[in-house]
Amino acid sequence: MREESKPVLCVVGAVGFLTAQDMLIKTLSGDFPLHEIVLIRASIALTVSLLLVRMEGGFHLLRTKRAPLHLARGVFVVIANSLFFMGVASIPIGEATAIFFIAPVLMTGLSVLLLREKVGIRRWSAVAIGLAGCTLIMRPGQDSFQLAVLFPLGAAVAYSLMQIATRVLGSTDGAASMAFYIQFTFVLISSAIGLSIGDGRFVDAFGESKSLEFLLRAWHWPEMADWPRLCAIGLLNAVGGYLLAQAYRLGRVATVAPFEYAALPCAIFWGFLVWGDVPDLVAMLGFAMIVCGGLVVILRGTRAEVVAPLRSRHHSTAPGSPCNRKTEPTD
Image (tube, rainbow, N blue to C red; front, side, top):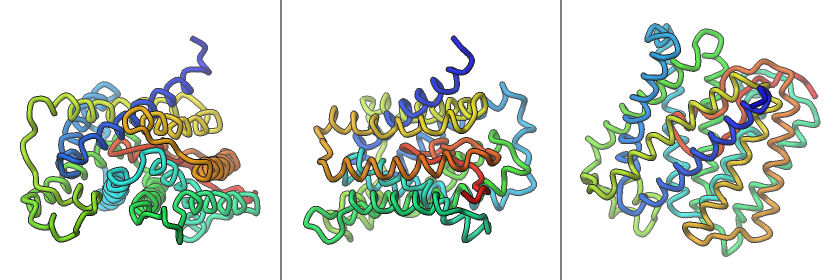
């Protein structure tokens, strides 16, 4: 195998594993509460992450002097993950993934507001194109508009804030410690939610909302037939996150990042195969605009330093995700 093909194969394999995880979580969204699935997934992924840390140098890699920032970053990931899967429970997985892919565009704007980075006209134009594509998919003001589309949009905002925290942490902490603390935060928060509202006392307060029911449903012990899917979710999450980290370790961001958009056709494929979802022409145009806007943001930013691999959310989370890098150039 040629060396230059390894990072591409890693990133394509990563998005394949992670979108399969998203599909499995959607199949369980009518039976289990989200925080129970997340706790099981994070427990499995945390175990795998510890094994990988041990193999790659030892547990001293987990030492940090910036635990509060790690916790804040983990909370952003938890919010992004929860909102994304609340959206997936109600809308097609392809649409949810496409809306989430607005995150690289949002990161550009947030880097200007929060980090005082400079962005030129071409990337601002890409931001406008991406936002227009997101609006096409969401279709506000039309009969087909669903409030559930706001969940993956909120997930993209939370994920973008998480990546801003990653840029700050990346100067002192490595990817292994950041991945571990994300999984640890998932275990901590999902356990707290289960202990506080895991009896389902609030599930009837929100009518017929599939998304809120997914969040608030009562916990119950999985049957034997459910465990293969639950374990697969944890393994897919851990392996997908590891492959993504390897992709960015072995390859240039300009080579690797565009292939993350393979998550979108993968999500559309799973949506069609499992639920028969077929995006219409308006949605496909929105998909294309988001991809074009995101690719411009990614490729114009590749002259700057890469801080961390893109899919820290999937060390936690979820579906397709945006590139994680600095955006200093003013083009």
